Each structure stands twice: as C-alpha cells, then as structure tokens.
Image (cartoon, rainbow, N blue to C red):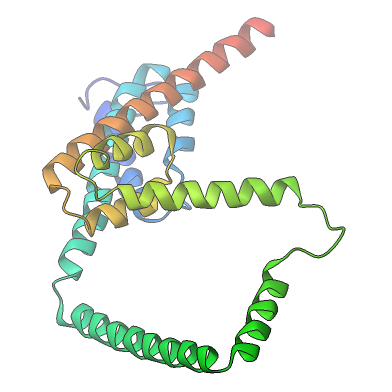
Length: 220
C-alpha cells in the first residue's frame, strides 16, 4: 500500500516493485544476488521485509519461468533440431572410427597391448604424488551435481530436487532450471515448487538479517 511508509520513506508498493524487478534480473543474471537483497531487506527495513520478500519471490518466479520456457520452446526451433542432427552425425562418425580402431587392434595384439599401456600411463597418477584433498572434494562435488541434474527429469525425484535446489542451493538452481526446461516436468508444477522454495529461502535469510542486527544492537 503506497500510503504506509516504511523506514526511510519507502512505500510498501515501492519496496515490493523494486524487489520484484531485482528478483527478475537476479533470476537470469547471477551477478545480481537475490540472497544478499533478502538479507539486506531484513536487516535495513524489518517492517517492510514482507513486501520486499514477496516481490523478490515473485520476481524470481517470473525470471526462472522465463528461463524454463526459453529452454522448452527453444527445443522446438528448427535451429535446435539442425544442431541436434549435426551432433548425431558427428557422434555416428566417431563411433565408426572407434569401431575401426578396435578392429585394427584386435588384428594386431601387440599394438593393442601397447595402446592399453599407453592409456593406463595417462590415467595412472604419478608415482609418489598424493591426491590433494581439495581435488577430491571438487571431484566429489562435480559427480554429485551431475548425478542430481540427471535425476531432474525423473518423475519421482525431479520436483523434490527442484524444491531442494530452490531452498538450499544444491544442486545449483541455475542449471537445474535449464535441465528442468528440457525435461518432461510440467511447467505449472515446476513454477509452484520453485517459487515456494525460493520464498522460504528468502524469508529465512531476511529473518536472519533482522536477527543479526538485533544481536549487534544488544552487543553494542
């Protein structure tokens, strides 16, 4: 309501509108961090955080649905199908070349053994080199994310994973939206689940921002 001013003279409708626009931008451009906006809204204007969080959630829902439909409709464009056919042709040619190479190696066992040893030399770690823990974590994270994204198209696991990504950010929401757009997930189900998750996330962050300010005031 424009007649109810917030601290600093900002109206409720203005706070809602600004947050909604920022939410749309942040949904498409990751640099515009919606989480930081939610924390700032709770910390700077606790009384108006409801309007800001509502607008931010609506904006995120609109932005993510634009991405979702962009992927889904993009699959129907002739350009996409032309690229798909070209990729299939390239894959077929690579398969033929691989099959011919395998046949040649079977005809010459010595060459096959040498090739196997050569491949093993590339895959095996260097002697005495210990694996870095950060490298292990990165590989585990990468594999987990890939597995999660593959499950997005599953009828049972897809929507729960979208909800999880919307709330906690894992799997990363940006690729989840793109994968969901290419999957058979119904658009209305995706929109509701994703918006609900984002609303919960923003509300918790705004509450945390407000609580942090109260804690600092008590400590001061």
